[in-house]
Amino acid sequence: MESSNDLSNDLAAAARRGKMLVIVWEQFGCYYCKPMHEVNFQDHDIVNYVRGRFDFVQLDMRGNRVVMDLGGRATTEAKLARANQVTGTPTVQFLDRDGKEVFRMPGYAKPPLFLAIFEYVAEKAYKSLTLRQYIVAKSPRPRAASCRPTNPVRARKRDAG
Image (cartoon, rainbow, N blue to C red; front, side, top):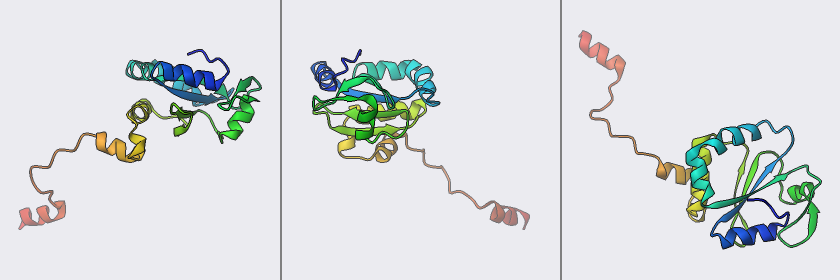
């Protein structure tokens, strides 16, 4: 989605499409922004999942571009980043339809976790579970062992005697 430089308009446009708004904070020279774009946003599973559920706005945490905040006030990207306590990049902010931040992903996450975070937010699991609880609940359960684990020292003694 091309930003209108007015976050309240971007939020309303996302809501009309039945999507959540995501603000991706970056900065020039951001080391981990590169793999986010070159790896994560090139992964077909991630792209297919997020495209139908989220609209994105990219902002520069040190930028001088004038944008309108969610309250309709003109500010720079850098001032908005400070107001939103963005201290590093990449930072991904997830906003609900009212513009309230419901989750924040500070830093880079490899593709499996990156996708899981978007699923966590899209499914609104943040309302009842921590991200950790959500991931554990979604993880496949290990199969039960068919026999009790043995102590290798005892087994050697038993076999030797």
